[in-house]
Image 1: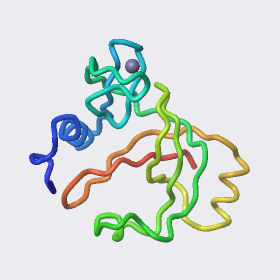
Image 2: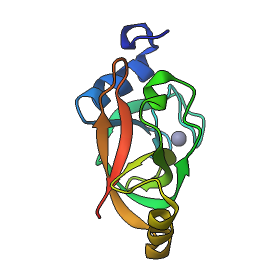
Image 3: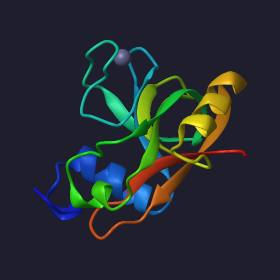
Image 4: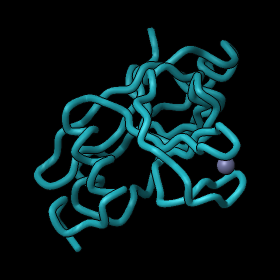
Length: 139
Ligand SMILES: [Zn+2]
């Protein structure tokens, strides 16, 4: 399964939305929480009664580091070196993504660490195959 057309529907919907600059999750009708990235069931209570939901793309960067060994795929190898971080979305989910707006160098990462949690906004990186989610922080 290497193209968007070959992915199961929740994953395909996620990538189609991301290609348009939108962040797609699912909201659970049982507990009301969001699952991101979207799957067929709620990651909080296990219910299969979920529906697609657009997220704001607003997040807080909690922690970041440089990525000396990028994810094992040419789309990431061509981006390296890059900064990778843990983010908490405004809607609640915590996950990891590429961070834009900072150089992958020790001094810049130390300065970012000393600033503490900073706001970040979702951005789509277009690659030859799938779009990649990244978050940009203000400089
Ligand atoms: Zn739930």
